Length: 79
Image 1 (tube, one colour):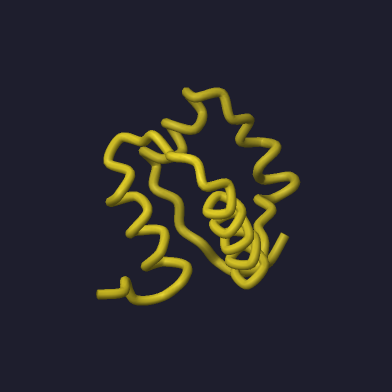
Image 2 (spheres, rainbow, N blue to C red):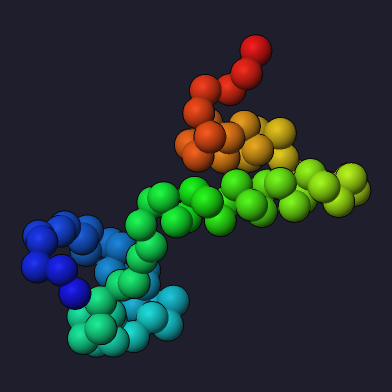
């Protein structure tokens, strides 16, 4: 667990507790996360594998979701 400060809103803690998250475990063990570069590499691989399947993807608001993912992880959306 890193010793950096962070903020949590009370509403978020209530939601998490009501959803069944054991908050004591979170504070004992911390929240694991990957470095952004590792997450981006995995997302790029997933994106490539989905494209290689050449199968249609059925989604609700999928175009907006895909554009958001592209913008966040790959860069500006192409024209």
